Length: 127
Ligand code: SF4
Ligand code: SF4
Image 1: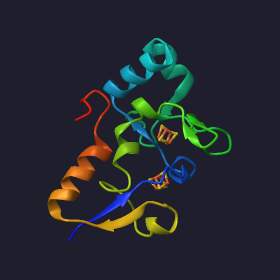
Image 2: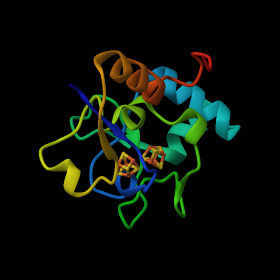
Image 3: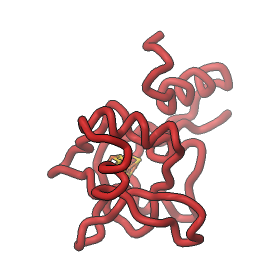
């Protein structure tokens, strides 16, 4: 049976080193959420990806994501797909040691339902 990892919103994944890649659509959505033009959003909150082929969210000097506010994501409603997909659709060896998501063995149907709900993009409705 598949294992679904239920996020506990501990925000550890918003604090460790890495990069959150942004699609054009996500930049549009994030800029609108922040009440900024896309140009201003890009200037203030993004940086080049390591391969210099796209944009990623900027980090704070302490390495946290620029949008982490205390123990909350300040752009939760429109956070990038990469954030939504972790840890069920992508992760890395040993992630269970640093991520507090609770593993649950579920049926294949339940797994599909739970993953779809956890990773659903913001403008795809609530059902
Ligand atoms: S995915 Fe894991 S590390 Fe990230 S907030 Fe959820 S429980 Fe914490
Ligand atoms: S956008 Fe939100 S969920 Fe994604 S890394 Fe930043 S603070 Fe965490």
